[in-house]
Image (tube, rainbow, N blue to C red; front, side, top):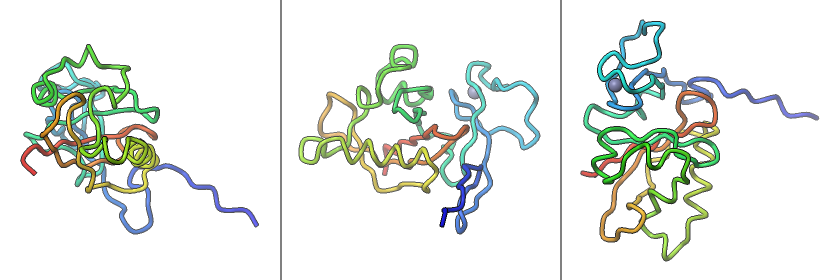
Length: 163
Ligand SMILES: [Zn+2]
């Protein structure tokens, strides 16, 4: 008995197949369905176009980060830069946990946080119950939506500062 080979596909999953939408990894602007051949955003001309399931993709005002399957930061949106007080260039290739930690890191450690994000990279569905805070700051709690984006093994973390 061998298990059927699972493939990571956009909208992967038997029950939650959902169309992906394209948006800019910097300014977050949703792109038209017929995206130009260029993968650079036509709005800000700075971000690359990435895609994620429609219910995960950031809204117009939602800050977000993208990390790879090893939890290294790939992109920080313009609004997330402002929210976190960081510059994308300073944190790209750093570990996510240098930037964000679970809100209860002192109590439970970061292992569950890391594990959740690694699973999200595999397309296990959208995680909506993870609460984070900026690394090095206390008393701030942001709700998140976390799930797969763009290429297999990348993870989109949308921050919802207002709950
Ligand atoms: Zn843009």
